[in-house]
Length: 241
Image (cartoon, rainbow, N blue to C red; front, side):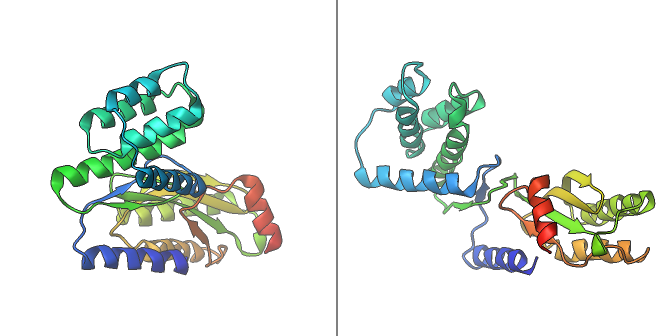
């Protein structure tokens, strides 16, 4: 938890020091590797600086006869200009992409276009916050994994305590709980929390309160914005520990 918490604290401090109050968070769950691939491609096209016609690229984007690679180029080119028409075209395509393989790419193009358009209209510096789990509005999405001590099986009462205490503590911090999944000896929470909030104390408080009823939870937990772990991945983690 400490590494993520320190990183968020430093990011909040940097934005405050630079007076930046406008930032963008990708809402979809796009793997970090794909996000980086998009930005590398975007930078390459920007360095090439090849002229293009917006309407021609829009036609390419919606043509059933063009290849995926060509449409990747069109999405990226359209996202590179501060143009409302280009933004709307990307938005329309992303809402129902003809090529499902381009869903993540069009999501990146959409947020990229939004940043460039916002910067042009406002004249203010825009910031993109990268996260494998994305977010919504000014909230970041995080995945947390909590385990029982000695991998003991949770009783029905303990399950009720976990759900009650975590919901109470997280709601106090204005956290949106998207999903709580309680298994035999661990549970996970997928959540959205305000960027300017430090929820470490709330999560620790929830664990402490639960442990008032039998000290059954480990005090250390996994907290990440990179990916949602599958049951198989969690089982492997628990086996290693």
